[in-house]
Length: 95
Image (cartoon, rainbow, N blue to C red; front, side, top):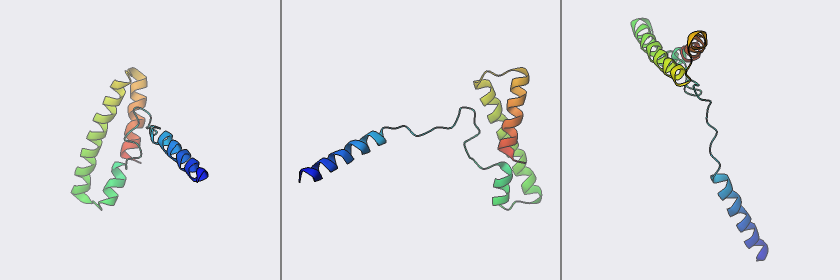
């Protein structure tokens, strides 16, 4: 009986400690961690022609705004901002 009670107590303590561990978060400024790219979203939706063009234009505009905001949050200027924005857009839009 004591062993069962001790085992249950240890499980409860371990579960409580694990529940308090915060989940890992993506690095700041990362484009929506593992979010699909514009190109993959368009492919999933099977877009073509004018619908594809319209979707890609809107997606790129949204990605540009998001990347510019992230660069401003990091207080980047000049070449650092340009480099960051270029990589951020490439990651968001896809190749």
